[in-house]
Image 1 (cartoon, rainbow, N blue to C red):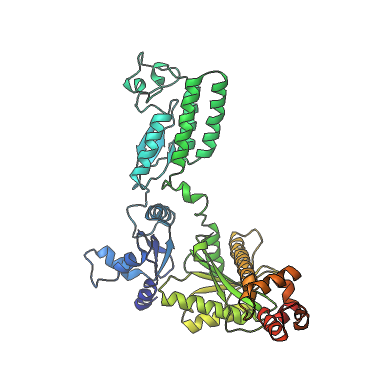
Image 2 (cartoon, rainbow, N blue to C red):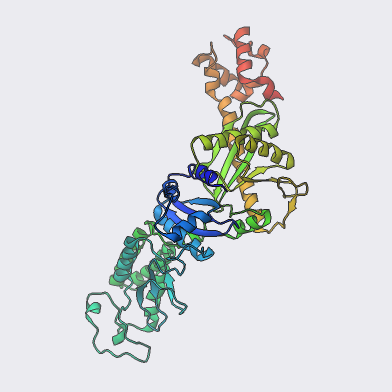
Length: 489
């Protein structure tokens, strides 16, 4: 991509947090960074003609394309940046390649495990939780663990047959250690506390609270009220910390960072970059009336409903899904260009090769022919790509196809919902009240007699004049306003 094209694309980046991925000529990631504002941060690379660092000058000269991934916060961007760098190992990234920038909480692999804060994750059978990108999150968890799940912090070598201390240290007196070194805590009870703490650190607060609740009930039944009260306070503390949004990869790995479908689509479709953002389109109408075009947005394989948009079709009359799709894409991306919003790496339209050709036409007219686009035909689940008559057929369990199906199904759901909303608005009570000559009393009279707006819409003007107070002129107005012929067809 030429420098001017890059600058034009960067101007459309959002002024929001996220991660940017710089690609070389071969499409591979050469640098990954995070930003509080994607637009400002990426623009800064191109503001200077010369750089103090030869490495930075080489990076900028090697950039052929840039893709972005929006996040909800800067903290989330930090975690995502770290994950992507470890995954793709870009040449120009140095600090995060080994994953040693952010701290972990380590639960050691010993008979009586300890908790240690470390920046080095090793293959030593220990449990690592993190990395943590906010020091406050780390301190919060350490305070909770120290007070309610106290484990030893000393480095004395302990085993079930080696308890070197006859008296516990001051930490036991303060309630911050169970003192296994002095034989005051059996190994089974100690490991139960370790398991509790690991559940808390891994974000399984609800499961842990349920587990402790059963122990609390059992303690109360045995009249061990002090232990029951301790468990009650622990449960309350767990709910408090569970409500906080701690910035660790556990928030994203389960729901957001499954790269397999994205990588598969890049491979199958021959895309230069991973399709971080996919825009999906569909059309919905009733016999050509109240036609609505919609776009849904998937980022990192997950639907982002805040970016969904609906368009009431204005330039197309009757049943014409092809031109309705063309109008929808034009209006969508014309708005994106005007507002300097980012564009997707992949567009998917519902339908076959004809829908694809009309969608391509709208992109060419807007000068956006560089965006990859496909269509997905529902009957055989065939993927059509530009300049190829033969569709791509993937097995139904293919992760790339399944992602496209999710986008297509979500676009269809949103299109149907949007169409129903537009249709129901037309046949609301206000549709009658807005007709000249129809006051509230006449509206109430018609509704009480015929039951609904839809029933009134099916009546002929002659049938409407049978209602007292509704003359021929008013009946004609009602017929036209409710578009009776369209409903009856």
